[in-house]
Every structure is written in C-alpha cells, then in structure tokens.
Length: 137
Image 1 (cartoon, helix red, strand yellow):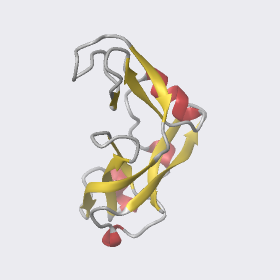
Image 2 (tube, one colour):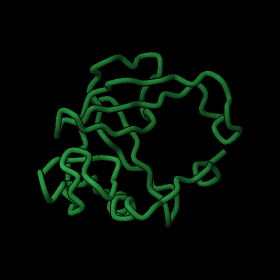
Image 3 (cartoon, one colour):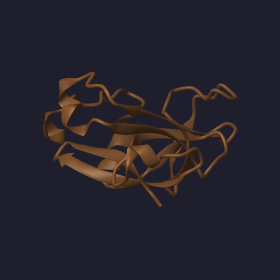
Image 4 (cartoon, one colour):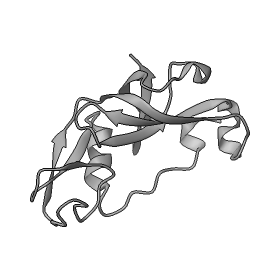
C-alpha cells in the first residue's frame, strides 16, 4: 500500500504552523514567549511557566534514539507491507528535554539501539502531506 493510502495525521489548531513548515521541508518547534522553553508537540500553553505566548524556531533535526518499538504484527492493514518497522522516540540535540517521534527509514529495525544518532528526513506523500521520518547518521 502506498503512503498516500495510509491513515493521515490529524492537523489541529496548534499544529497547523508545524505541518506547513514540514511541507516546506523545515523542522520547527514552538518557543515559549514567557520562559523561552522549546516544546513539541505544539500546544497553546507552556507546560513550564503556563504562558500562552509562543513563536516558532528552526531546529537542527538531529538527535539520538531515546526509545523505540519494532512492530512485528500487522495492527493496521495499511502498514502490512512495512512489517517489521520501527517507531522512534528521538531526543533532539537542540534541548535535553525535547523529543520528537516518527518511523525509521533507510535502516534495519533490528539494528536500532539506545542513543543511536539519527537525523530527520522529509517524505512528500502528496501535494498536501509531508512526513518527518528518521534515518541513521
């Protein structure tokens, strides 16, 4: 099954700017206007200082695997051709407590290890959707 036929992420009020940037192959995260904390996923209120003001800043798109799961079972028919596949929880290099997630591309799920260095890559699914995925670096 092609990427275009898979279930699609749901864009919400807080994530619209992020998805627009990803479509341009830019990786951004929110930066709190009150305390300067970087945060992802996007949300209306800062978890550290409770400020409602925020902006968007670019990040490097590099990090290390903090956690992962390798799916060996077909839970959704749309992903049957991908089994086994790895979903990564990546600690970004831009801040100690900043994480992003996504699937592994260009690598063997069996070779994923804690602390493995990875970099973000963009996959254009169609005119309306680009995905952030991770590859070993």
